[in-house]
Image (cartoon, rainbow over all chains, first blue to last red; front, side, top):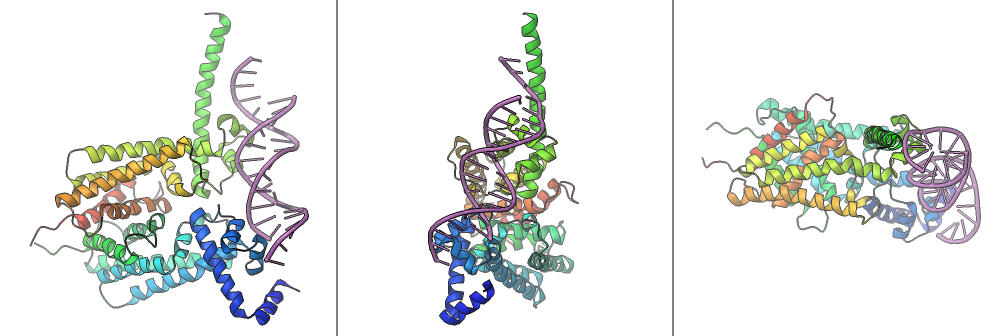
Amino acid sequence: MSKISARRKIAREAGAADYERKRQEIIQAAAAVFRDQGLGNATMDEVAKRAGLDRASLYYYFTGKRELFREMVGAATNDNVEMAEAIAASQGDAESKLRQLIIGLFRSYERHYPYLYVYLQEDMDRLPSDSSAWSRRILDLNQRFDSAVTGIVGEGLASGVFTSNGSPKLIAAGVLGMCNWSHRWFRIDGPRSAEEIALIFSDIVLRGLVSSPPR
Amino acid sequence: MSKISARRKIAREAGAADYERKRQEIIQAAAAVFRDQGLGNATMDEVAKRAGLDRASLYYYFTGKRELFREMVGAATNDNVEMAEAIAASQGDAESKLRQLIIGLFRSYERHYPYLYVYLQEDMDRLPSDSSAWSRRILDLNQRFDSAVTGIVGEGLASGVFTSNGSPKLIAAGVLGMCNWSHRWFRIDGPRSAEEIALIFSDIVLRGLVSSPPR
DNA sequence: CCTACCGATCGGTAGG
DNA sequence: CCTACCGATCGGTAGG
């Protein structure tokens, strides 16, 4: 019996719900391990221990480490891009859009914790070169996300709402860096919520970008 | 001095210079590989290829991958901390200090390229747990660096030069994130010099932090 | 006896 | 879901 049909059989007998629940448990456990150790250093043995089952059993639910990683970051990154594109396409000036984006991003980090951080801490350019459909999709998502942010900044500069010597791309890189670097220090049980942090950061960035009224 | 010992001395001196030169060549090659692949994924074989010698020969010059990494990032991080502490201890208000720090940091990235990026892209908390003297030293340097930056921000808030709802630590994390994330996108042969980028970023951050005069 | 290596192979561990 | 095990690969080291 093939792996797929074995899965189907189990799914029928024990219920697809159990199978799926177990998968989610494993993803949770794996995410904690990946976050702590990094994808490369993390071992499947460690994941198994954290999930409370034998290492070999992981391969019943997932084809391997790579699939585990992909499933945990795929949905989260997708959400993220949709959020950014919705904000970019919305009504309002660039200032409010950029603020919404920073807030949306931090909320996303919190809601999907730690999936997006697991993703952020891996440099996709450096992951074992693999021109798979997944890699191409995630690269496309990344580009769309960057485009949305760069677009908002560019809009702000063009309309005169923002003032800066930097290009939209460079400014976007700065703002995103400020947010993304939080993967090194943000803790879900820390003193500040993601939203509080987002507000403070967006205050700084927007005061820094928004053109001062003439005095 | 006997003929023999004279010869030995010359041989030793010429050898030592060659030896040191060779070491530096290897460090250069290894830095490029570590930067491209990340420390964990990089193989000594790749380093050897890039350096143009046999893999086994690397072990004549370095005890291993770890020593290679340490030597390349050690000096650079040390410079960095001294720079930050000198700025923190200097005359001037927090605004000019923070600007100097951002500029100093980007200059440092450029000058030590890619050593500091090799360091930044590794999460020291996650490197194979090793409470060696080196690890303790580098951790201490990190703390001193953060303290210097946090100190400058705190000084700015306390003196009223800066206005923000954020703590010095949080603001410092934001500013440093903006700079540090450049390890993902800054290229030494890119369109902007490190200094240009630093000026643009510090304009944004400082306009965002410096208290507006009452209108 | 030291230097700068090389070809071959070790022990240990990873994913599967 | 486990026990036993593989093929491959890595960092590091032996003798010459």
